[in-house]
Image 1 (tube, one colour):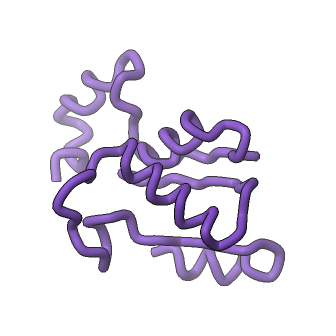
Image 2 (tube, one colour):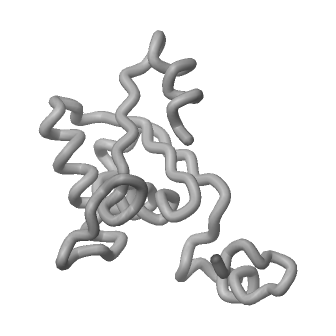
Image 3 (cartoon, one colour):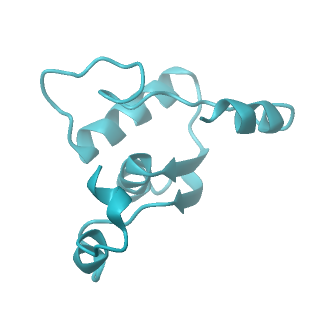
Length: 107
C-alpha cells in the first residue's frame, strides 16, 4: 500500500518501508512479536542502513510500532505521523475499540 506514496516522496526523501515482522510478506518470528521488540528491530534496520535521524510514519498496526520507536528513540525521530488507529494505553482507546460502530478494528 505504501508503493504509490513512496514513489511520490522518493525524489525528495529516502523512503524506507519495511514489512513489520509477521505482517505483509514478512515471516512470523518465533519470539518478540510485541510492539517494543518490533520498534527495536525497525531501529536496528534503519541504523544498519546508515541513518540516525528519521521521520517516522505509522499506519494501522504500524502506528503502535512508530509510537514505540519515537518513545524509545526520541533523539532520533525528527517527526512522527500516526494515522488510522488508536494507541492502547491512552485514555479512551478501549471504548473506541469496543464500539460496534467501528467494526473494522475487530478484523
